[in-house]
Image (tube, rainbow, N blue to C red; front, side, top):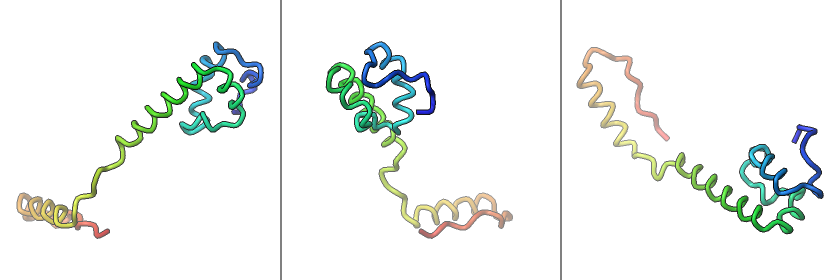
Length: 100
């Protein structure tokens, strides 16, 4: 946290925590509950700890939306390329299917 206006983590109030939560969360890459600077605060403020756990769960689920469930086989890509070449028979600039 490069911002010198962050509160002292030992004396931070719940209101200060809520004010700085977006920046704290962003700086922690979505794992604020493992930040050693906040362990004492979170253990003394169970509502804040629950909020952090909820936000971490939401962030983890949001990340999973961008992970493909499966990768189509090479046959699928070859089929797409073949169909495109049929639709554009004079266009030899179509990319070849990538091999993984």
